[in-house]
Image (cartoon, rainbow, N blue to C red):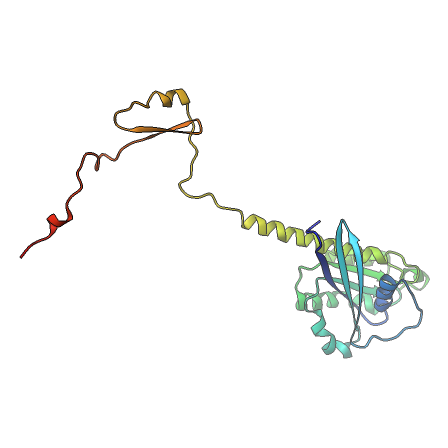
Length: 245
C-alpha cells in the first residue's frame, strides 16, 4: 500500500490497426458487454474502471484510439501522458500483426520507452481462420521484449489479466520512484560529528591532569587540552596599537 486514501490513476492507450477488437476489449472490461457489430472509432473513445489491487485503489482510464491512418493527426495528442499501453492485433488479420512494430515505435516516439506495454493477440476464438501462427506471435513478443497475452473478447478470455498486469506494473514503478526519492533525501552525516570509545576507568584516571580538564559524557570521558599558544597570555590592550600624533 502506497499511502492511505490515495487513488492511483493510470492512463492506458489501446492501439493497433482498425477492426482488431480494441473498442470491444475496452467495452468488455469496463462494462462487461460484447457486441458483434463493428463500428469504426472516430478519433478517441474513453472509458474508466475502478479496481482494487494489493490494498491500492486504482482508476484505469482506457483510451481507445482509432487505428485508421486518416485519424492519425487527431489521435496523436492523446498519446501524450500515457502511462501504459496495449498493442493489439487480430488472429485473422495478417496486416495488423505486421504493423505491431510500427505501432510500438509510434508509442515510444510520443511517450518514451519507459511505460509498461503488452502485446495482445485478440480473437483467438477464431483459430480456424487464423493467419498468424502462435509461434511467430510469441517470437515477436520475445524480440520486442513484451509481455504477451492471447485473448478472446467474445469469450472474455484473459481480458482482465491484460489490464491487471499493466496496473500492477505501474504501481511497481511508483514504488520504485518513491524508494529512489527517499534514498536521495537521506540525512547526510554532519562533518565533525564523531563517537568516542575507550575505557572509562582509564579516562577517569586522567581527571587530575594539570594541563587539561576532563568531562564525562554519558559514560565516555573526553580530555580537553588547552591551547598552549593562548594559555597564560593576558589579552592585549587594543589601544596600545594606536599611534598618537
